[in-house]
Length: 77
Image (tube, rainbow, N blue to C red; front, side):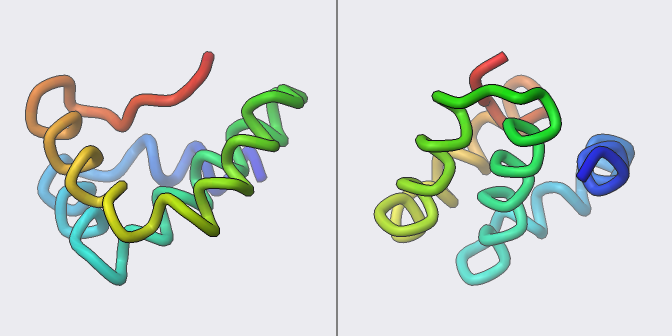
């Protein structure tokens, strides 16, 4: 899990934005889940699982905006 999080954090910004487009955004949802599991955050893990089910249709837009503004996706830390 930690290696996946480290790999996603180390990607260039343009690749992160490409991964945020619809259908590929599942990578960012899995990133959130892996980050919460690696950090042993129960609330983050539960929320990530809920976002896998309900967040996929609209989460890609939020990811693109936060990547452009902050250079990273937002998550509970």
